[in-house]
Image 1 (tube, rainbow, N blue to C red):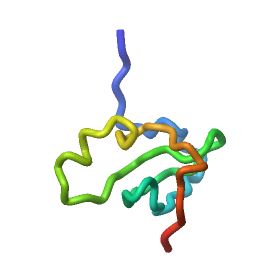
Image 2 (cartoon, rainbow, N blue to C red; image 1 turned 60 degrees about the horizontal axis):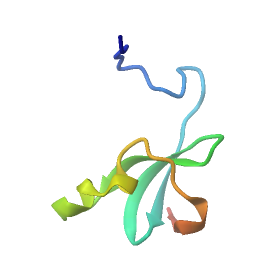
Image 3 (tube, rainbow, N blue to C red; image 1 turned 90 degrees about the vertical axis):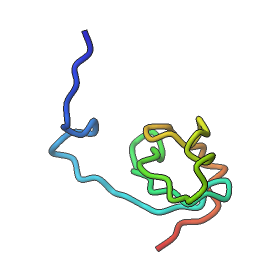
Image 4 (cartoon, helix red, strand yellow; image 1 turned 45 degrees about the horizontal axis):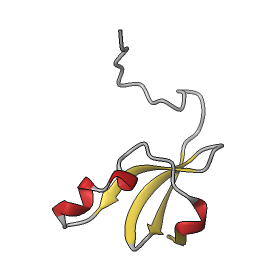
Length: 71
């Protein structure tokens, strides 16, 4: 039986570092984890962009495809 919670997956005690990045030409908000960057939010006005499986929230990004960090 799945357990659903509004608590974050990364733990309540750990500080979360968010960065905005350019990934394959898409602007994303990502969370830095031990394994790499995880998609949190996609900034796009094109509805088709939200259907791309590699841009779903929770997806681990490939570091070699990150073009730049946006401040």
